[in-house]
Length: 505
Image (cartoon, rainbow, N blue to C red):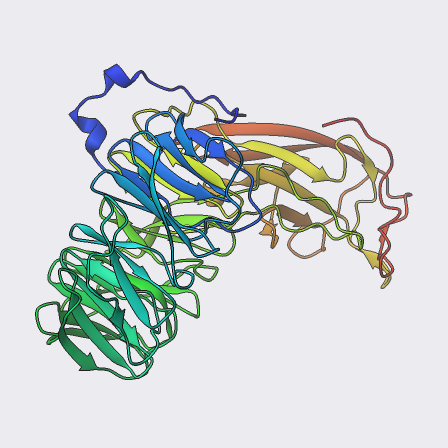
């Protein structure tokens, strides 16, 4: 478990009460953080009871949900000779996972001891799924195999052979599983024998968009429509027109169906197909499917944000920006990548713990019972250096840049509430804007922010996190308008002029 830069206190496990099992429905503090480096994007994580299973790189790790402490890893010694990219499932006390060299493994879910291994005909398409007492494996896009997790032996006499390749991975519910093929058919099979139960023909199905089963209904997309079909016979129960192409899978909560569109909006419908709120612009395209936690919908976006939304009001109730453990460095052209990390899979909730997984192998656990956030956000002035001397007027030549300030404001424990950030310079509140890598920029443009006369200027950055903790940070610059303004950088070069030496932040 990695160290924390903010004050987070972990409560004793013995202090837990029945309240501990209430799901997170609003901002919660970071309880623990864990990471294993990886060169490939990890697959979905699995939480079973108080154990979190994560396949990262060439190993599977079992962590304690309450503390993040490692229970076991497999293999204990040298890692496997292949990467684990399809996640972990647990069934009948066995953790099952697949490697990208056609190997399938079953290990004891409590100890990590290997129970069996199996060579597949081809690599797994999608990920293993649980259906009844079996684990289903899609060998390529045209064959489905049922495995007994206890011994790794086939549960059917023969795999299910599909006439047409699958458009998306199989999904399962109790003793049924479903496959969508590229001839626009949805077929339901029983996992007890692998026999077909029913099939229906649909239209305009898209590759990789997975259906979701909730209770007795399977939800999927057909063109711009959200459909709900009875799992018993495929009869249509619900239809809603989203008016846009739909991504990933829908999220289901009671009578609400929530989807994300390819133009970065979130929409929610009731099961009659009527919108329950206006579409919500997400500000950035979804990175993976939305999910429901505690009656709120959570969707991760490509700008590194985990967004929690109230579906009835279409309002954000929390967002958290995931960042890499190590800030990225500039490349050989002097360009620094955004200091953001996108999520590898949708969030997973168990009890009072919400787990966010990053593509770099991070796991972050938020929990109102085990994490306590007592400090406000952190702020740094990244440009110019604190204490620098700089030009402060807006009237610059064509080859010069107007003076500007850049601030990095963040909150690791529960997330920065972005609309609370306020920048004051010399007692004057400044208009700021968000840069593409999540920094706050103040530009002396002569319109929104007018220039400054010579002299020492105090800068105050005020911000609040999602739990109400407020912080104020002070910085200083000296305005000397005899200093040349910033010059535009030549290709591959750097800015020059505009400020002098300063003190450390």
